[in-house]
Length: 188
Image (cartoon, helix red, strand yellow):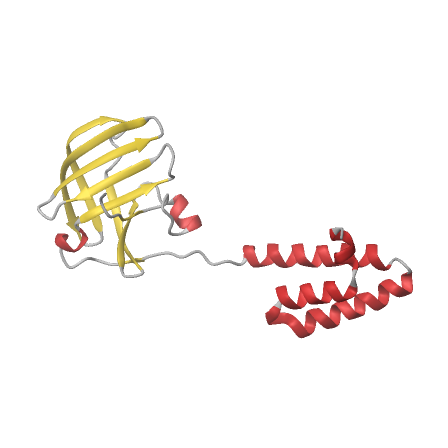
């Protein structure tokens, strides 16, 4: 049976709306019954009902996506450097993948990997002061030259995350993501 016939059937449309819009079920079902009556009176039953149903569905989907709150961490000072020591990752999965390892003794290593291999590396000393990590590189190669300077420390769902202090726009707009901030990463 073609899809437009299923959508044009009043019983199918009411069933679809009732299933998709559970929180607003009474209002949606009564609105569809009202639209059904209007469509019958206008003798444009199927076409009218399909157009209105699709319009309402698209409006509902776009309204729910627009109002979605982005998750963000809260600025918090770790008790000591050992609390944030570990392996972290930030990247998009293709050309930008930074692997950062903070050792409890104050040394760090970082590597930038992409689809064509390793793009750069850095190592040196890091310090934690209040809610900020500062890097003092002793070695930086290729794309990692000047890439790590200062990271803001935040707590998110019980874990430490780091947001580059000079590159907060993406994080501020979209919240926590693997691209916007460094997150704990288990070494393989």
